Length: 112
Length: 112
Image 1 (tube, rainbow over the protein chains, first blue to last red):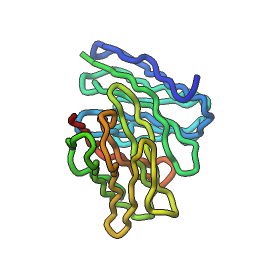
Image 2: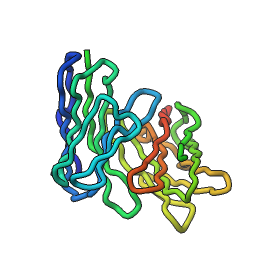
Image 3: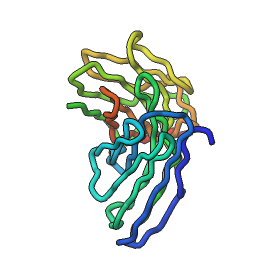
Image 4: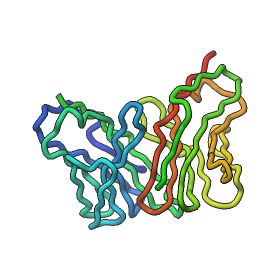
């Protein structure tokens, strides 16, 4: 693995179902982030984690939860998916001195 | 409060012409500034960043940006557009460890 991986690449999900998006990084970065990208809205921060064992809410946290059991993994869970959660989800990590973030390839989620 | 404004959601230039993508920010403290590029169906890649020091920063693929504190701007330029520059570009500002604000993006179209 080099950088950040996300799984699945894409998913179609029925409303009301539970879904976990996976994110793994191998750069030993302390901070990790989840964003959603919607047309015309840019990227909006869902949740973040400054270090393993801690998490925080971003701009649009409702309907999502995260955990950070170790440095490498930062899964995002939708407990009961709704159509408004249809989006492209990006995981990112940061460990540099100037906060630059490194992004995964994204997960395209469609909730019907 | 911090925010980023990108003027123009779509910019179209001819191949070989100057590229100018505008970004203005608001920040209560000296910011770190970034430009990212996103090619179709991919994650974001860092183009360049301003942290401290020289206000004109050079990035990959011939892009550069100038930090102008008096104008609160960080416009992205490239002297001569190439077809491969067609992508979406995001300006971002960071003022502390877990706060990273993105603009809504500018899609660059390059005409042959």
